[in-house]
Length: 311
View 1 (cartoon, rainbow, N blue to C red):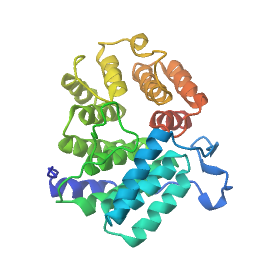
View 2: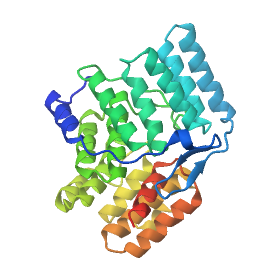
View 3: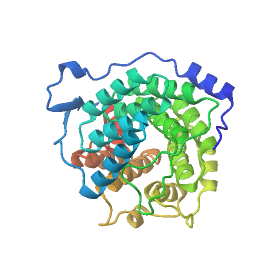
């Protein structure tokens, strides 16, 4: 899979992203039992726990195979990802940092570390890493990234480049830097090779454009989605786009079968729907509900937290 992003687009992104830095969590001052501090001032803690056995067996086998084949970067990535899946995000960042010190020109290490910087609310550090990853993979073929926790069909859908642009856009979005977020999502759409990834980028890009007041452009994006799209894993994003489009109602997408992750995703998106339609009190109620559910590592939770922190 070839990179299709023009060099000038990456350079323009790197220029526009130069913004004054905001305060980030001071990890050195945190107790060992804490992972980070939220945007609302809450201490974020995780009960470090084991990974479900079926996933642990898979991750360990991938890590051991990489080690046996002397693919040390892959081995180090899987070990750090395993640590993050268990809930120790700070330790995962340290493992990725150790790997970067050994392999400073490997974009995958920066891409994975920046993901966990987002989890820890260190958005500026995440943005720095994403930009470094983009510079390192510029002009290179794209790379499929295997899932540690595979989807129902065990088909990896994301790549190094789509993951980089997706998370970079999210980091800017969470900081309220919507112009930069929009450019990252546009870059991501250019390299998306399947419906699931296109839906993910369209979802966040739609909300970004609405935040920018570019409602006509946002509305035009909805022409690219329809109720009968076949997806493997990004069904929550698709359902929310259908709500934005007026095809589904909120009651149709809230079910008892939803996972905690689904509920965080749907909660943020439905709060956003009320927000853009002028129902601020209802939006805040929904975002507060996501916050109280406590799944603080989910992107929907972090986005809800960011909205609550602005009030």
